Image (cartoon, rainbow, N blue to C red; front, side):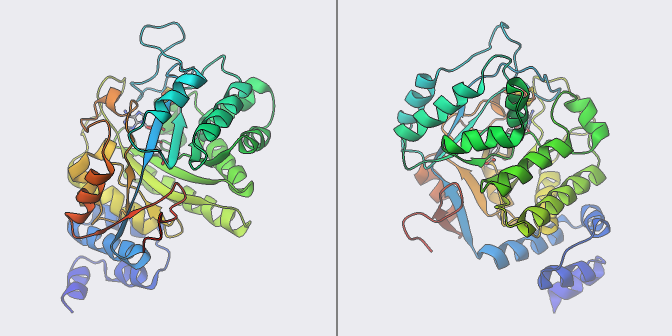
Length: 371
Ligand code: V47
Ligand code: SF4
């Protein structure tokens, strides 16, 4: 069979057999996929896996991103969004501001994504009020709010455990944690790009705690800055180990993985060799193949661009995120995509590729009885 010959010629036949059997790939096999001269062969394997999991179904969500503040004590080197307290350009939304923005969204959001900087003064009571007010204003929406880094920050400010923070926020309506703050787990790189942020152990522990409390979470990887290919593979491996553990313990686990290509503008990191489009697609494909226990992979059009996100749907991705409406973190760092997409645009993007759009909620349940 021609495909078999293709993988054999590239030395990938063993990997191809394992992918078809749904078996776990080793880190060495991941290295071979990164080193393979034919990126389309790697993409074809990832597409095979995506198709085995989801067919041609391609997910999107009507959502709204809200950033409550960009004031942050961490000052990560890659971040163009952060400001010091009192610095020009810093902002803090009130609870009413956040609710007003959500109610003004063109379509009622099904998923509300709220994240912000680690503000030195905003206390847990504010976030409890925020969640309660948002849930009251949008009773149908799922609240996917606060990265593990914010959860750790709230716990430090309050002098309580991260489990207590999660329990308190869950009681106020929190249903999911977004995947931000993971960056790259390798300690050497993390020390250079985000030394003040939670380390890998803390980030993974908080996601494990959330899973055990019945909260689903997402996971990201920021790539294309100072990390090596081995650092990317280590990151993926740590995520799949955490997922094994969370699922074995009967917890919720990671729902979706989001690879975030580094946006290079207005920040302190100078990259020697910026990512090419094919680097991005290969990383997406290898992620799909290594993360055998995380069901969904998001082509986040905001950071990838709309056209590259479309290509990613044939390199292992099955989700386009959503309408978003307004985005600051990527755009302040040079993302050239538009601010939001309409539901019709998302559907057209998917149908234009011959794939089947499925509107989902935050937990990837199809909406309105779609297949
Ligand atoms: O954690 C910051 C990243 C993340 C840059 O869970 C940058 O569904 C690229 O996590 N270049 C926040 N990335 C975004 C995020 C996210 C987005 C969409 C959906 C979900 C989800 C999560 O943005 C941060 C950081 O890794 N980021 N600066 C930059 N210059
Ligand atoms: Fe703060 Fe997040 Fe920016 Fe780091 S990435 S400086 S934690 S807002």
